[in-house]
Each structure stands twice: as structure tokens, then as C-alpha cells.
Length: 194
Image (tube, rainbow, N blue to C red):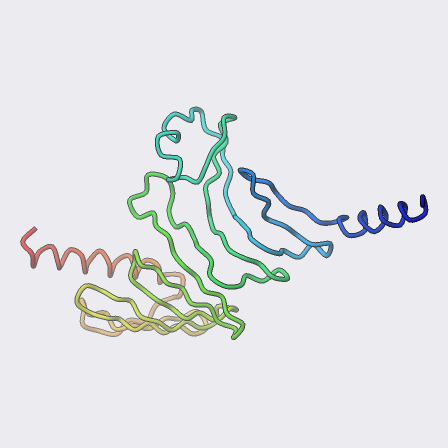
């Protein structure tokens, strides 16, 4: 009998040794297995200490959640891992508290070596290689659709506002997206007389 109990305890210890997880608001998440590979649902967040929680108690969903110790957990992303790889649809929280441009972005991870990024705030859908060497997609403006192609750090697109093709570095793509959305919105406002 005692030999059986020792074997059961030893088996339990072997299975649980090396596994980690977090319990946040009663949910168990952010698990790693005994090989330290991420598994299951993950909630990635940034933690910071604040002086008062009054403003966050009025709108706690704007920044994630907080506790009475003055810690704020600002979400970055959430989704599922399998064997340390992101799988399925992930939600990314773009921006920060009180940011007028704060929004959600969806990234769909596939087994094909590509992921799809869908951003309804900045109106684009991109197909990006997992090694980030190539990107192809469309930016949907109020009156135009702009095709974007990036390969090995260089991007190319036709700028409908300047009426010419532009080549730029991949890291500048976010600035182009913001510029196109702002300019497109301003053009629509002027046409509507606002």
C-alpha cells in the first residue's frame, strides 16, 4: 500500500515538476509544460504600478484590469499556444490607456508559414510570412484600395494621394498606414463639408 502511494506521489511530482501557470481573476492561464513549452490560453500583459485606482475603477476594461494594490495589468495580446507556437486567432491590443487610436487587431496564425493580420481600425489585411521576410496585402481607404508588397525589408505601394509608386523600408510601413488613414479621412471630411 505505501509502495503504491509513493509511486503515485512520484508520478504526480514528475508530471507537475517544471510546469508553470498563472491564476488571474480566478482563471488559470499562461501555462508551460514540463519541457517549458507554452501551451493553452495565454494572456500577455504589461504590469505597472499606479498611484490611485480611482480613474481605473470608472472604466477598468479600458486598460485590462487592476487590483487594490495599485497594479494595473495592461493587455498586450491573448490567444492559444501549442508547443510554443501561436495557433489560431490572436487578439492584439494596440495603443494604451486614453489613446484615441487604441484598438484591437486580429492575427490569424496558420500552419502554412504565414499569418494574416486584420486591423479594422486602420483598415488593412496583410498576409505575412512567419519569418517576416515577405508581406502582401491591401490597405482599404475611403475611396481607394492600396496594394502593399514587401520583400526582404523593402516595401512597395502606389500612393494614390501623390499619384506615384513609393519604395520604403518595412519598418516605415506603420507610418504609411497612419498617413493614408489620416489623409483619407481628411479628404472625406472636406468632401462632406465638415
